[in-house]
Length: 269
Image (cartoon, rainbow, N blue to C red):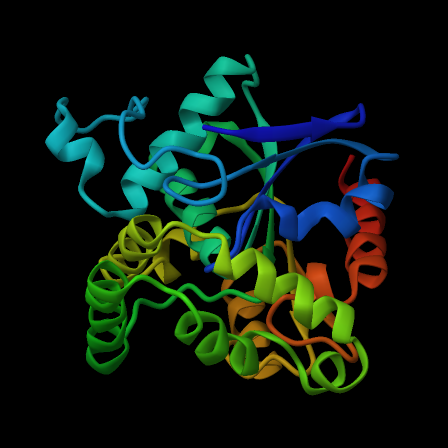
């Protein structure tokens, strides 16, 4: 599993959104690494991480057929294996969108490894039937046609807020470039894994550790009302709404995102 780390202090593992990779954290890292040891992996099949061959590290039947079947459990196993590699017993675990789903899967598999959660622009509920069908259709298309053009054009209006699309052309171009470098097979695997994910509402309701819920006020995929509902599910959560940001708040408004995380880390440490 490819990853980048920088900074010293509290280990902070940040899991990226779909359909990008760990480069989405680059702008936020500048501030975060002054306060934490920031670790940003590329998830399975995306960025520079391989699609196959990860070890599990969790209680599930052994063998590549299980490890390689698209699931949040397999994605979480990759993260746990990385923590083992880095000899990290406990970390603050953060995730944006899909990264939040993986963070919840890590919490389900190895709660003793999670000292706190940062859930940015994500949700606990599983997909409904229409959403699941759309993901599976997109996975098939990625394998059949590749992802050139259509994936970024269909994604950008949903993941970037209106302010970013109007005033931050450099961010729009950056996100487009990251999307268009992702391997089609990794895109397909991630879509199928997300389609298969369970509802995590009860899991979060039972988690008593500190949680920071962050949402862009212009997020149309997991809007502020949804984030407030998510925060209300958690016994020990804080909610931060970021103006002028959409679904990729760490990319669109990295300074505001980092400030929220650093302030929260200071209160829980």
